Amino acid sequence: MTRERGEAQKGYGPQSFSIKYNNAATNDPCAVCGEGTDLRVGPELFLRKDSWEPVCYRCGRERAPVLAACLQAFRDEYEPRFGACPECGRPGEHMGIHKTNWFVCSVHEVCWFAGSGLFSAWLKETEEDWELRARTMYGYREVEPLHHPEAIVAARRRDEELQHRKLMADLGPRPRETEDPADIYS
Image 1 (cartoon, helix red, strand yellow):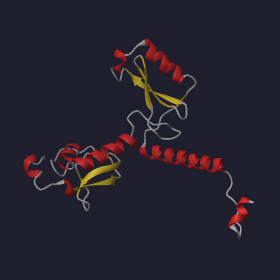
Image 2 (tube, helix red, strand yellow):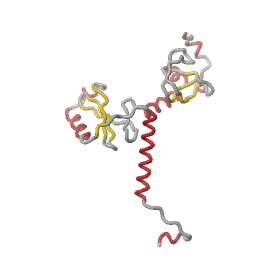
Image 3 (cartoon, rainbow, N blue to C red):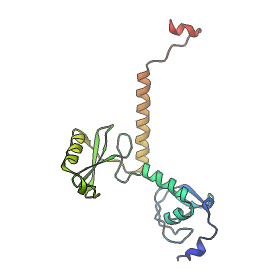
Image 4 (spheres, helix red, strand yellow):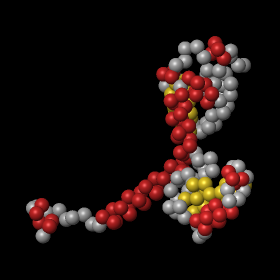
């Protein structure tokens, strides 16, 4: 049963909402308007910190635009629509070749196919644009992208750890510890 939208929205200011980790995908009714929420597993918008009453995206944007924007920024970063690099977990860069849509990670020289005819930009592009992109992708390894947020976070952690290890190796061994700091330079 849907509550009357005007009546249900009374008294809900931005402080009435919070972002919490939701552990079940559901379509429970919105605590503000009563419509379905279509919740995913992961961060979602809820009514009050002490409540698990879900809030739909529309009510979130209307009543708590800053929180809704934060939630959307998180989704854009950790739930890339077209997948993420399996090596580093970062969203790929789009490389359209005619009607086909590819995403690439130039750092790891990998690419993945996302579909055909997804964007209309190809209508304004030239054969030279497509040839340049095809040359850029030449030699890239085709991979299966990551889609699940936990897998993306794990890949990013692995990549950061590898970057740290590489940096430490480039710096070389630590100077030996001595009684006299001047001995380090002798």
